[in-house]
Image 1 (cartoon, rainbow, N blue to C red):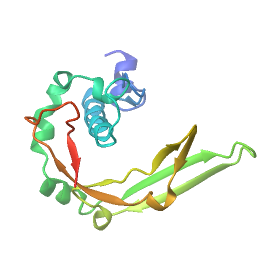
Image 2: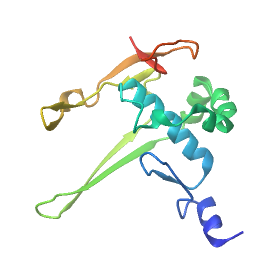
Image 3: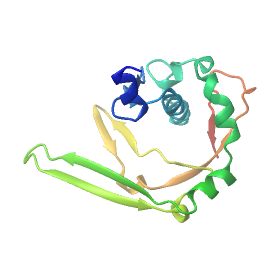
Length: 159
């Protein structure tokens, strides 16, 4: 085993890179899960196919499909019952070059199944606007059948 291959197996380097957003991963399965998730988010946000994760054909993601179909909500709830998820957001102030950091902890009670975040980023003319009041708001969604046809068919449909 070459050194770079060994590094990627233990997450010391990024052996697999998403062709759309350059998100790196140490293993192919994790990259495939990233692409599947981002495809659903791109579709839910009504992003165009061209230039987004939606342009990656589903056939390329098939090796991960059996695993993804075997995970259900009960399995996730059992796995997350004794887990705390800690999210770290870090940034640099462009004027002072000071680093700031925000930490948020989540437990099973904080997770909302069958929900997705509401869109909170939009455009007003040439400006990008973030609605901070909508930042934590969620909405219910349902999965559409793969048989659904139509030019605008998506994997997630908001109620």
